[in-house]
Image 1 (spheres, rainbow, N blue to C red):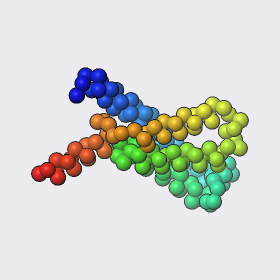
Image 2: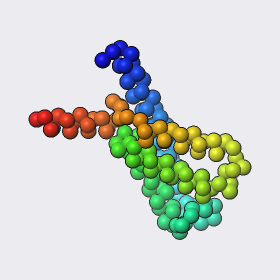
Image 3: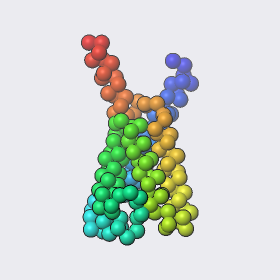
Length: 146
């Protein structure tokens, strides 16, 4: 492997890890705040969020659970494409269901756009060295050759 290729691989691994941890923290903290005050969460999903096709209670459980589960998987780099895709979907639903409020807050809308772009990149990037997925790939290869 050429020195330049090795440098790019290391840089990609570090950058991908930083993006995963940043996005995971955003969604994990959102899920954690919802789970800490469940009465307030149900009230918010009833009065403020307009999640299409779901009752407020179902939307609250799915949204909170998705934020906590997918962000944890993303932080570990475990089934990263699925975790990033799950958070990407939650991000889209958040924008749609809360658009009546955030369309007047350009910074909040910009945040969701940036998170969506980072999540789209995380869905499409190859597995890097600083993830549980890479460790599992190596373990599978070794167990198949043994």
